[in-house]
Image 1 (cartoon, rainbow, N blue to C red):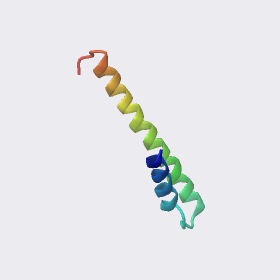
Image 2: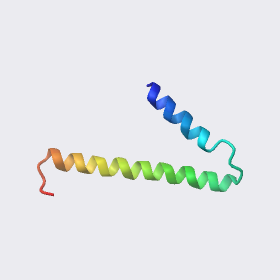
Image 3: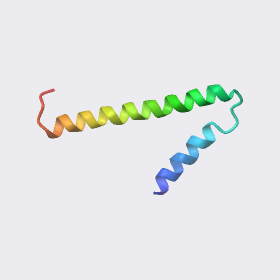
Image 4: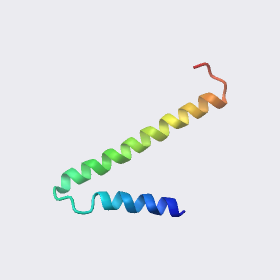
Length: 55
């Protein structure tokens, strides 16, 4: 649980004093999108590995 809190603090500090609010919003949305794509790719890889698909 401490690791998640630490990552959250780093994420919040990264956008703390950024001035163009629209740019900060776009960057936050993009970072969430990238995290979702990464988890999706990892899920697909693990699913294929565990179910015996040929790569």
